[in-house]
Image (cartoon, rainbow, N blue to C red; front, side):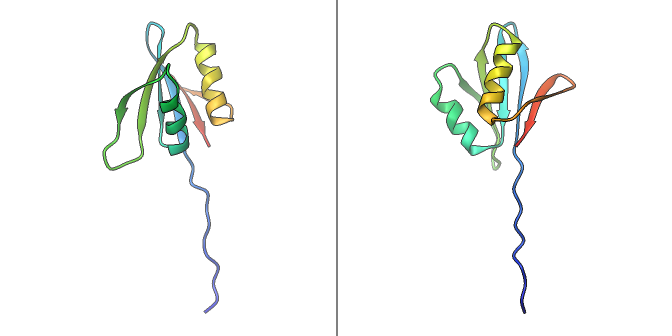
Length: 90
């Protein structure tokens, strides 16, 4: 039997929201972005998922625009505002 293997690109989601004062939280299910955030001194791992790829990092920024700039650079895509958080599907 001839058949084609199904191939699909898995979508990852990375989001950012204002936590308190000047702190922002970044949540991702992408291992590549997780590794990138772990290498940055400014970011601190504050939560993770058991039995799933999910990490939450916290960082301080003076403005939302600065935090959004970092989010867009991490994912090389443009974030979309949904309810109270910025989301990138990549």
